[in-house]
Image 1 (cartoon, rainbow, N blue to C red):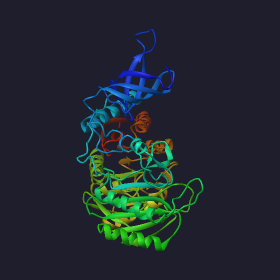
Image 2 (image 1 turned 135 degrees about the vertical axis):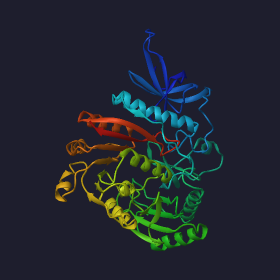
Image 3 (image 1 turned 180 degrees about the vertical axis):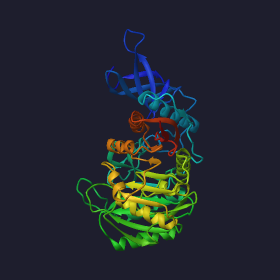
Image 4 (image 1 turned 135 degrees about the horizontal axis):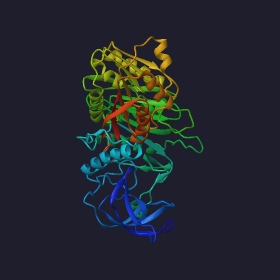
Length: 474
């Protein structure tokens, strides 16, 4: 076997990150099986697959031809499904997606974490599996990715202007997207208007090679419960006349837009955050609700991307925490204070700790908006120790700690801090069950017991999984 080899395979299982699993004989020994991970294949598929990577213990492949289709397989809604990496599981029935996500969390905790005596609840699925995102970030590019259909067309296609989504693994090429089923139909209307407006005016696109050009990103943010709409155009320089023209024309076509902002990014790095910003229409921010709590969302602030599922996530977090009104809660990696605020009416006091100072400022505004008096947020480097903040501010010891770290998980020092504080209960919220299981193993070694976990499907059609776990001090 080597790269490029075509194999006929039967897919029997499904791996984390959306890969079908096939097992074939590993030579003369019938008991030994060689594993092939096949991108785009589902259990029940019989396929021809091309080997793309070959190692001693496994291989990776892509589907070349489907011989027998799995019962899980459906026709994807989006015409860009084969190219865009955003919705890799869109061709799998939704019940299949949620079943496998639950099984994958279970497998991670049992196989990698070594846990056995804990309660595993089924995933909290989404009621809305399309048009569920409140934020979409599109990129401008001078290198447009052409689909097979476009390559086979006879007419000449402009390859030098694209506004859409990056092809996975190719950060210099962008798929020119006319419609996406993740945000809203209004979002598609704004996307196509923006492309036509700047393309017709021959406005330049920023190049990471030459570090010249004007257009960088289009970020669209919408509110589920207030119908606010924010347009944030990220550029490499300030052009007031062009932005005024864009804003005026946009509002004529899309009067639903409530604010327009220009973030000016002077850095070479291709990020959708500016060094400074100018507001061309509206207040420069939007509002949304999670349950009864109101949150102000600025162009660069973090807010859970699926508002409806965020409410399920926070409700589950609160339920697991079992907080009573005499207890002190610490919220680690608190961001803009959404969880701190959400559990505030159940606790005596909530103290949030966050590394990013701008997030703390957003959180302080949200505390004022909701007229909450028992939440206090602190800037603390959670890659180091945060316990000095407790001493400096004479904070009460925690009864409950809620932690919601980034994908990389908690820093070992943060784990040590938690073990030193010895709260009665820990609720660990994670977007990466693998690093979550790793950290929980350390907490269990330090005297805690894993009681239960439950995943929440924040991102239908993707392999991403949010998981909530409860630990209690033994």
